[in-house]
Amino acid sequence: MKKDFLHYQAQTSPHPLTLQVSRASGSYIYDENNNAHLDFVAGVSACTLGHCHPKVVDAITKQASEYMHVMVYGEYVQEPAVTYAKFLASLLPPNLETTYLVNSGTEAIEGALKLAKRTTKRHKIIAARNSYHGNTMGSMSVSGAESQKSAYRPLVPGTTFIEFNSDKNLDKITKDTAAVILETIQGGAGFIVPTNNYLQKVRARCTAVGALLILDEIQPGFGRTGKLFAFEHYNCIPDILVIGKGMASGMPVGAFVASNQIMKNLQTNPKLGHITTFGGNPVIAAASLATLQELTTSSLINDTLEKEKLFKKLLKHKYISEIRGKGLMLAVMLINVDITNHVVMHCAKNRLILFWLLFEPKALRISPPLTISNEEISKGCKLILEALDSYKK
Image (cartoon, rainbow, N blue to C red; front, side, top):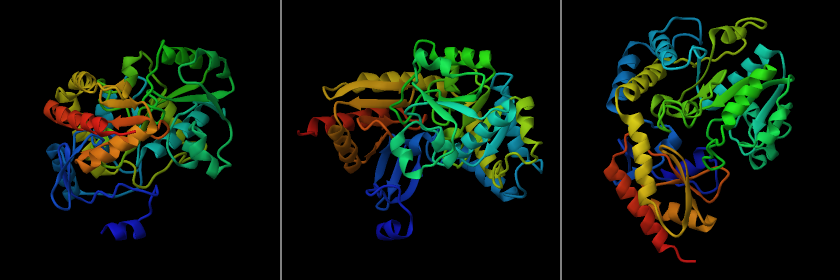
């Protein structure tokens, strides 16, 4: 199976981890020999409620037995998508009332950028250095890591990059700017949180010049930081909110959300301003709804901040320089790259799943399911400390 995987399925790196999965449940992924691997990654922040959460599985099964894909997006009234969008709106600020459902985070970024240009009738975009918004040509054009983009130039023109958390660059946001796009918490750069009221300052500058603010919550959204959405921590409401990853507890989905007035700009001049065949798929919408209902009727979101404290209490070692991030979106910063690689691989052999971050090679990603128990956290942290102790220069 592994040989076929490497030959017949396209790879994204020279050395994939090649864990052969037989099943998954809760905080564990099981290999072909039924060994349980404790998951501290959650599909890169996607499996919000863990693997195969019963309520999500039930919602998927029920909807799949009734109807699946029936029509391209936006033509037929399909209850799962409508119910989900209305429920989501009830949990968001009034200006974020209308949702466009798509298939992935990067597609949601594309839609948000198009919507901003169409609404403002401007074409210039401001983005942050070391940002990551996806891998399509438009999403790469507003992502700030040249190492990921240089092989694919020319990209979409018109983007200027500023430093995240720097007040000095705000004057680059002008009346020619269609939108500023920022990750609420920078992911690939090392889980960098905004400081010194940075997002509020960007929000004020956008309002002053008539630019739209797009916040990318693809990774920090849906409870991962201890709020339903991370922008709630920072008193900054975007004009367009982009979501995905943990939205449907492991099913492929994304969306962008704006006011009904702004979203109507995709209906005319041109008609079909953004289209998708499978966006709003009823099975995916049912999984999204079940996820959101569980998050908002349980203590999982509040518990996330307590679990963050537990990780930070347990993970103390001479090779750990700091722990960045918020909630269960944590980057354990090690003192060099070799140690990070050693820990990931040593823990893999001991059945703890860890992973890297895109642009910060010293970071150890910790983004487990929100359903992870304190006992599982303690078990995993013990394995990380053992890996650190075993490192030899």
